[in-house]
Length: 217
Image (cartoon, rainbow, N blue to C red):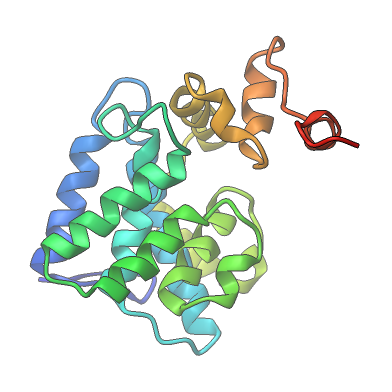
């Protein structure tokens, strides 16, 4: 039986149940607890609410996988040290969708949704299944466009998926997931997180890289 929250139906399908199980298992650690799980469900719900308000049709299964997998790269099970956390989650989502019979194009749209979810503006110009994740993330983490969602819908979502101490908890999860790969944060907003938690962290400087690279003047 499907579940409905704030008028958004969470599909009762094998793919959705499997995605929920993957995320539950990955986020079952003492560092992040339920924070990432509830955040990921809210991202799906906010993104679908905003897409609906815009009159945009979105494949709910693809949107669900995008929302549920978008922060898997922060978890101990899925994170690596060689690439951005966004790419870790995107790779996992694309592989999951292929294993569950989705097309390469569909897997690619969700890969882009996750890989680009910390890149402002660009995802909103792409497929609805790509844009929906950014809409949800910007709502839940940054508080952007909260006025686009009714008070009743906000209450329904937060009742189903509470956000106690969320601001502190999500920053902690970001830091935990990126502290051992600081070089991957260059050119992103993620270096703000490392600088906040670690006063000794030094950001790579784009201008300095240009001025000091191997090309002669």
